[in-house]
Length: 191
Image (cartoon, rainbow, N blue to C red):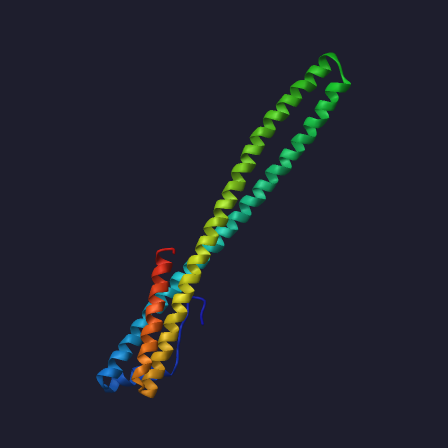
């Protein structure tokens, strides 16, 4: 298995090459073509699975960045709250011009906290959205991975069918192929 997707290499490869070079009966030829098609579709599904997994990781990374930024904003908010509390205490401990100065500071800190809170809330919402997108992409990735696995099973069954010449095994090949294609369509449609 490489980092670029799934690759199935097995005994059927020799049989397919042999039929291609020397000819064969129509059963063998059709099964060889089906195997080649399944391998191609499986490679596409593997690529799409890798793509959706990478997208999920990027969204998860974005969520972590947004959460860190929101945390920083909340820390800044707390610092402003502490300053506001000190200013409120100073209002009660002072009189005259100094008291007015501290009252103005209290109002300024309240306004600054509102702005900081709005920014923190916005960053938290962005983090939740990125988390949601990551989960959706992982769901799609699971569909692509299932589709790829089912096509690999179909290819393996096709190889066994070629080697044993048991035509009844075609039901397994076609069943796994059908299920794989359904899972692939579900991945494509983000279901």
